[in-house]
Structures are given as structure tokens and as C-alpha cells.
Amino acid sequence: MAIDTATAQRQVLEAADALFYERGVQSVGMDAIRTASGVSLKRLYQLFPSKDALIEAYLHQRDQQWKDMLAEHVDAATDPRERILAVFEFLHTWFTQRDFRGCAFINSFGELGAVSPRVAELAQQHKAGFRQALTELAEAAGAPDPQRLADHLILLSEGAITTSAISGSAEPARHAREAAVLLMQASLPAKS
Amino acid sequence: MAIDTATAQRQVLEAADALFYERGVQSVGMDAIRTASGVSLKRLYQLFPSKDALIEAYLHQRDQQWKDMLAEHVDAATDPRERILAVFEFLHTWFTQRDFRGCAFINSFGELGAVSPRVAELAQQHKAGFRQALTELAEAAGAPDPQRLADHLILLSEGAITTSAISGSAEPARHAREAAVLLMQASLPAKS
DNA sequence: ATCGAGTGAGAACGACCGTTCTCACCGAGC
DNA sequence: GCTCGGTGAGAACGGTCGTTCTCACTCGAT
Image 1 (cartoon, rainbow over the protein chains, first blue to last red):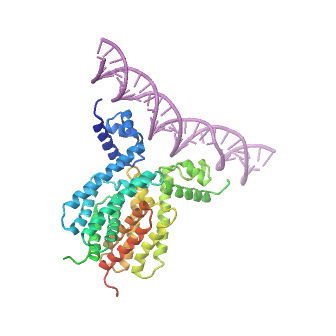
Image 2: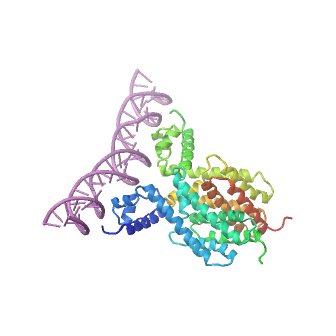
């Protein structure tokens, strides 16, 4: 056994993440993942019994990393309104990453949503988690209708993600932040 | 010649549109399009010399139909602000269509954007056209900075499209409309 | 009536993909 | 030292896909 199971699994997931995200799930063959991870095909299949299972693990990992990065940015601020705006600063740093190519869940949903119920389900869960986080931030900021504000902020965020991905510019994050400021001024009670 | 070239082309495009949009571009084989359109494979390939060419024609047609539907809704209103809000009413009627599955350009971009420069380019052009239309509407409504308002409205629209596609609900269109009203109140001068 | 260009139906081809199988080989336990 | 379960490398398999080819046939022009 050249390398232990845990590191092999990590290498495979790392390679799958990079390739799936960059080229899309369907355009990447198992052989490309094998080559990139340096793991034998046999091992790959005993770690993940099928490509579908690997896709699921990829999405699961993306969800976790995304949540962690978001929380990191939000928790750097203490003022409740600043914490909401930190979401859009997170988006901006995400968009400026060299390999940014939009939301993995939106992309996978577009590819496989109608064909793989599991992918559709995972995309829904990911977005529901984001909505939940935004609702809590809106609540903490004293919004009279936190879910409503959260729903508005979601639209700005998702719109910024896809617009930035297609245009190749990070500007949509700034626009979203601007619009969020305006919406918060309209929705939140005057600052105490 | 059983049917003339023009109707054959229309039938192929109709079938390709339905299948590509429903299942995604890569999941649909040329044979499925042949079966659905009732056109022979030979004829199909002399109408569209490759699958890429058919994809391009599909996206071109989507762009045209989408613009037409949007214009139809917008032109039903005369008041400049109502014309902006008509965009979101258009989105709502779109989202409630039985076969709604998000934006064909966002979906295709997620699938092939990194692999096919042509698809990426067409998605950019489509979105640029939408931005142009929104900018003109914002201008007509007397926005002091029409591009800025247009950029905000784009985010709401794109966000509503993807959120609605993934959640399967048409509600995001209503949320986007609500947020648009708030943004217009903040950005536009008081009504004369 | 005959020719020939173009047709429909589908077989065929070559490439690729997900998955499994082969087999020589290694290292731990007797 | 000698098994033997598990490994790596990659060949092999069955299926699909985009594209081309075959071939009997039709139909308009001569």
C-alpha cells in the first residue's frame, strides 16, 4: 500500500474538485481524475463506487468549504449590518480567485438537474442553507421581516454569482453590495 | 423530398430547443433530436453540419424568443416605472411555465463555458443585450445613473431566475419585484 | 422510358466513457 | 522461505455518441 486510504481519498477529492469545477461534471472522465490524483483506477473505485458517488462527494465538499469561507468573512465583523455586507465582500474575494467559474451547484444543476434527482436535491439543500444563514443575519440586524430581507439579499447574491461568472468581472459583487445597502436602508429601522 | 427545407429546419430547431433546454445540451444525442423531429439523420446534418452548429442555432433562437417575450410584456405598459416592473412580471409568467428550467444561457455556460468559447461568447452577448434593455428602461424612468440601476436590476433578475429554477417555485419573481420597487424608490427622483 | 441527383432509413465507424478484469508484484504473517 | 490478500498499471468490455456511409428508392428533367 503506497499511501494510506485517508490521503488517497483526499487526493481524489482534491483532483475531482478542481476538474469538475473547472470543466463541468460531464466533461471530466474518471480517467482524468485518476491521472490528476495519481491513484490507481481500482483504488478510485473502491473509494467511490461510481462517478455519481464522486460527484456527490464533490458537491458535499464544495458546500462545506463554501460555508466555511462565508462564515470566516462574516465573523470578521461584529456590527450586525456589517456582517450582512461581509457576505458581499466574501463574494468579491471569491469572484477574484483565478479559478472562479460560478457556483458549482448552479452549474451542476444546469447540467444534471433534470437528469439526476440527487444533484437537484443537493443544489436545493445548498441554497436553503444559504437562505438560512442570511435569515439569521437579517434577524440579528433587527429586520422587521428577516425572511423577506433574506430573500432579497439571496437574489442579489445569486445574481452576482452568475453575472460575474459569465462576464468574467468581479464588479457584480460591488453592485450587489451597493444594492444591499439601499435595501437595508429601506428595510431596517433607523440605526440606534 | 417529403418536406421542404424551411419546415424541416423549423422542426429540427423546435425539437432541439425542447430537448436541449429540458435535459441539458450534453445529455441529448443527435439521435434523440432526429427521432423527435422526424427528420432523417442525413438531412439533419445537411441543415446543421455539426452538433455545435445546432447548439449555436438553439441558443440564437432562445435569445430571440426571450427578447420577444420580454418586449411583449414591457410594451404592455406605458408608465416608465411600470415598464421596469413589467420585467419582473415577465419573469413570473416565465417561471410558471410548466417546462421552466432556468436560463438556457446560464445552464449552457455552466456545462460548456469553459470548454466551448463560442457558448461562453453567446451567453455574454445574451446577458449584454438584457443589460442594454434594462439600461434603456432605467433611462426612460429618469434614473440619475441608469447603468447603475440597470446593474442592480440585473442582479435581481438573474438571481430570481436561478433561485426559481433550483427551488422550483415562482416566488423569487415576486421577491425580485418587491426589491426592485425598493431600489427604484431609493434611486429614482420623487414622482412628478 | 430513362437517367441521375438527392432522399430516407438505418447500419457502420471510430472515439470515448464508466466500469470491471487481468496479472505481475509486494509485504505481512506463518 | 513461502504463501496469500491486496495493490498498481493498464488492458478489456459494453455501451453511447457524433458523424459518415450504404443502398434501395423517388421524382423531375430529358
